[in-house]
Image 1 (spheres, helix red, strand yellow):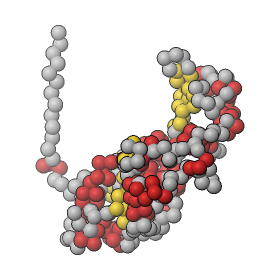
Image 2: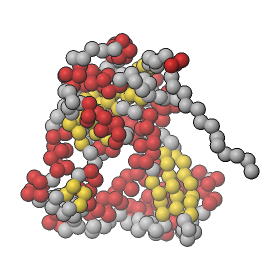
Image 3: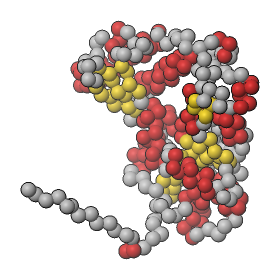
Image 4: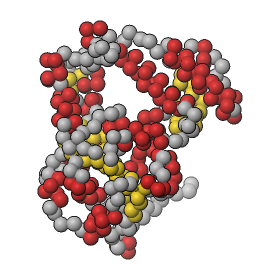
Length: 326
C-alpha cells in the first residue's frame, strides 16, 4: 500500500499522461476510459494536483480496491461498524435513536454520552476522515453532507450515479403508513392516465404527511422527516417523475415514485467542491447522462479514451446451448 505521493512518483503510461494533460480544472471533467487504463492511478494524480480529494464510489467493491491500493482515509456507513456498548451495529445503537429527552440536543436530535462517543468506532473514523484532505467513501456519505478538508471531488464508476440517485430520491406512498390518512382514500388506477390529477393527489399526500409528522420516537421522526424531504423534491415544480400504482397480496394499493431528473441530487452531491471529476468505463449516452444530472455542455469537459488493447487479441467466450428439442 502506497501513499498518494508515492503513487504519483511512479511512471505514467502514455494514455494516462494524455488524460491528465486534457483535464480542465475549471469545468466538470467527464473521463470515459475502459478497464485497464488505470483510472485509480489517474485519480491519485488529480488528488495530488489539488493537494487533496474526496473520492466517492457507488460500489463497495471499488471502495475496497482504493483502500488496498492507497494509504488513504476511508469511511463506511454506520451499519458497517459495531457498537461495543450494545453489541449491535452502529446504526441500531439505542443512544443514537433514543426517544428519551435526556439523549436529545437543542435541535431535538439524538446525541450520545461523552464516554460512549469516545468509544464509538464510527465517530472516530468519521472524525479522522473529516479532518484529512484525502479520503474515499460511498455516494451516500457524501450526499448526506459529510466532507473532508479538500475542495476536489472525484466520482469513480459515475455511470452508476443515476441508479444511486433514483434509490436515494425515490419513495413509496402506502396507505399502511401512519403519515397518511384521508389522502389515500381516493387512490385508484385512473391516475395512471391523468398526470395533473395525480400531481394534485401527490401534493395532498404531502400536506397530510406534514400534518402527521410529529412523533415522540426520534428514529421514526427522522425517517418521516427524510420521507417528507423526498416527497417535497418529487413534488417540486422542476421535477419530473414516473410512478406506478401497485397492489400487494391483500389488494392494498401503494404508489412507487421514481425521479427522472437528478439535477437537485447532483447539485447536492457536488456542493462546496471547486473541482469535480467523473470517471467511468462506459457511458453509452453522454448527452443524456449530462441532461439527467443537469450538467450544461458549456460546463463540461469530456475526455474519451480508446481502449489501449489490441481488439484482435481480446478473449472471446462462446456459449453453446445444450438444450435439445424433445
